[in-house]
Length: 212
Image 1 (tube, rainbow, N blue to C red):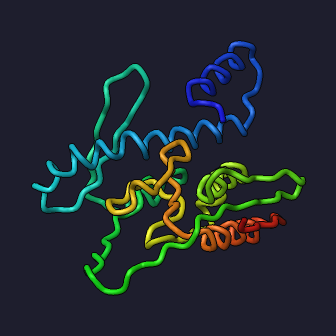
Image 2 (image 1 turned 90 degrees about the vertical axis):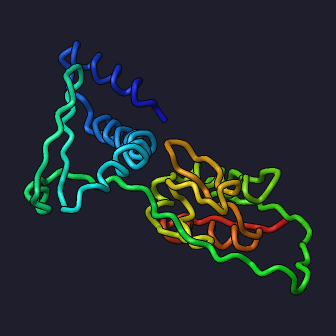
């Protein structure tokens, strides 16, 4: 996938040549801009601005007007319906943090099953078979498209399978997919197989998934 800076360069070169900018390029640039805001700007807003705003006891809407090369402008409105009249507003927010109950100590000893792997046969005959089951799931998600998998809305351990929030309990099991997205891999091999089959079925992809 092209980076945001690469897309900007491509679009600028097309402008210089007086050539039309492909709509796909515009959509890809918009997506990467939203990803940048979600992964880099939104956490800063949450950490720095939200605590200061907590002193304000009335609802309001802050609008940040950004023009490259010019100072930021911030406008304030008391009307929560301000954006209803705007057609291209995109709400950007992280997945909510989830509270997990702590397991009680003691009780029955958990028996660990032998480690197994996954072999995924794609429609074109190519095979995904990585060293571990989670790596095969990870590669499969990247192959079919992170956005497509995210849109399906699969939940694993109370959080989205593809999330943009680092979970306090499962953060070591959330593997990066790029552009701020994280893949939940804390599950057994059989569950990962079901997840892959669910994804494939939902997007109309015929795959074979074997536990080996």
